[in-house]
Amino acid sequence: MSSSRDAVPSSSSRRDFLRNTTAGLAAVSLAGCAADAAGVTEPAVVRAPVPLKGDEPLRIAVVGVGNMGGGHVEAFMSFAKKNKEKVQVTAIADVAKPHLDGWVDRASKTQGFAVRGYRDYRELLKKEDVHGVVVATPEHWHAQNVIDCLGAGKDVYVEKPMTLKMEDAFRISDAVAKSDRLVQVGTQYMMLPRYREARKLVESGVLGHITLLQTSYCRNSKNGEWLYEIDPKIVPGEMLDWDAWCGPNGSAPFDHEVYHRWRRYRRWSTGIIGDLLVHQMTPLVWAAKMGWPVRVTASGGRYCDLKMENQDQVMLTVEFEGGHTMIVMGSVCNETGLEVMIRGHQANIYLGGNNCVLRPERVYSDDVEEKTIQCAGMNEQDELRLDWLRCIRTRQPNQSQVELGAKIMVIVDLATRSIWGGGAWTFDPATRKAAQA
Image 1 (cartoon, rainbow, N blue to C red):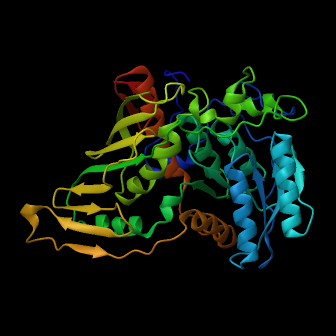
Image 2 (cartoon, helix red, strand yellow; image 1 turned 45 degrees about the vertical axis):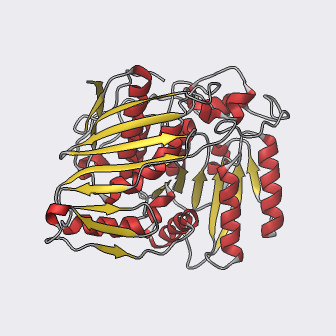
Image 3 (cartoon, one colour; image 1 turned 45 degrees about the horizontal axis):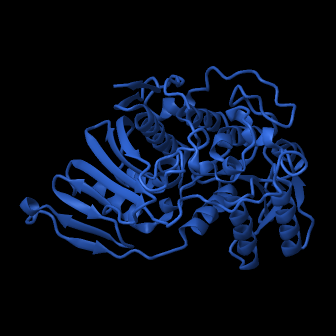
């Protein structure tokens, strides 16, 4: 991953941000099974959206069922069985034959009709009469997957992190601006009521000037992180289209460790920063109504899992436009994290439990009343999926949107540059360019 990547220009305002079109995309043919190594390209298919008639079942396709994608298939089938939503999984795509065959068979038997399977997701987009597509591929594929789905007239649910690189996040946002389709980013904590209550408090002005956000995602294991089971049968050839798996990230020698455990490797993942910290940063940045991040410094290292290329502990300092700072800690070698808080000049919001707690600063104790807002617990991942399905029907805005996802990807990208290259990195919202401070 280069630390000198250029981003495409834009304005910092939301309207201009959404209206800007992607610059500098290569005109690369996608006729073959694997994408060209030049990177993300224009949509391989251009189609009109599939009309949704009345309360007919939503027809959903899932691309990538090696891990999270299978969970999505199960969730949608459960929604239908429990009458939570009229939804069918009608098509599945995966470059690995065992994954594809296994989930096509399971979904077909569970739903009582033949689910179609594809090794190349673009064939699915050409032939399948689906309303929405879930993208659960490795993150280096997300931008191309989403852009192709939008070109094919599909609404999209894309797993987090939204992309691998910052500029690909802007490519998605530009594609959304040119489309009438919606994209849900899979950061499920956006559905938790405590963050919505915190946003109301922020909007009320009771905190005064917000000075600091703090959050973390910490967990621990004896052997290391992302050590998913290796299936020795999955090798290039009939069992796996390895070139297609590599796709926009360019060719690479096959490696079981990389294919099954790609989050451990720098070229294919940002590790803790993109996979774990995105969960916590996204709703906190939204609740505190932060603007664009403008300066990021990150540090960390490999302290326990020395076989992993990515770090097993990191610390981020993020500065936002408007005079605000956020500190974020991530670890997969110690499970004790930071208290989740929004600190203000006049009061603080505590978000570590299910509830939203407001407490005044001591010098403002006569001006701000302490209170606890009770918030119900939920299966936030299912609620995010259901939110996407409801919005496909109603065409109302979905909860976890691309513009917020792009802000988070700026943090992820700058933190990654900082942690590998050292020093602070800055971002100019007006030009979408990053630079070393």
